Length: 399
Image 1 (tube, one colour):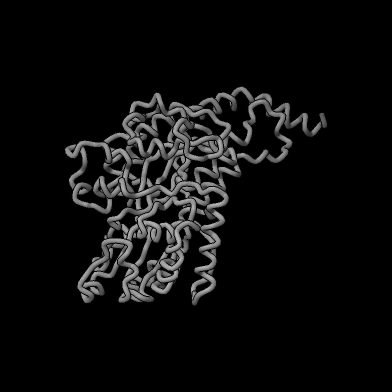
Image 2 (spheres, rainbow, N blue to C red):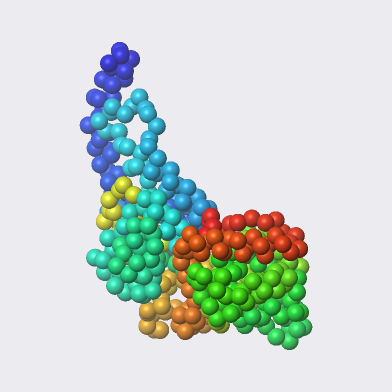
């Protein structure tokens, strides 16, 4: 050992017992990374009051789901060499990863396939059995992230929402009707007056739904009427965007916009001139999940947090204040649900409408190529003033 290293090491070794003891205090720390806006402050503040000093709760906000995925990838990178690696109390880099992170359901397959997350042992949680079966099925996947009835559980759903149609109330009052279903977007009076998401699964999916097919259809070439319908819808669109589709609606440059409930619900609360509807034939669903990074044991504190998120009071507060809905309210008795939720069908849609709606499932390689080829053809062979790009927006990289 070099003298300089020895001098540093000797002094630090004398401190090692004390530092190691301090490290032991971190064993009860629960660190989560959650998507901005997905948890009301009331919930974040209530959990520490509930657990007291038993858990050192450390919540951190991330701005976008893409950032969560990047963090998960970074956690699995080997640590950079350091002159301090020989210290007996030095923790490896994996210890710096949080216990739980928010991940969108459409990122789940990718995270599993890349071995970024670990299965969650949730069967022993008191409220797992009360989670609606559909949300249990959503997170049961095989080792490649494909939905599997007998698969392991890879996430804990705590919030979900829909794709909606927002519209200008005054403009549609002049027309004498309001949007009710996807087919209304094709009406001639809306030509050039619609904002669409710049997202192939959403736009092709809603067109499939209009035609009576599933969002998750894997054989587009067997639906000959699909391409003409998409071409017609393209003529209705003024623009495609994942993050700027609301501005034209606010400025009255468009009369209607297809968008995610997390964007639309706060907008219509602030602007009484705008309203929204969930198409009655069914729509695309999304979910936010708690996932656990690979390489760490799931702590008792993490299990307590997941169970806390599923409790009735937490589920009600989250549904009322986060622009998303807790899956738990779908199984609750009406007398357990806050009255303001019962009277808001955009937050708590009718059960039959939810049954007609679908989570976007992973596509096969062949199907993904079909979606991409059709999307490119529609977007590049006709007049398209918007910038062409492939993006999932909330969903990340296609598909």
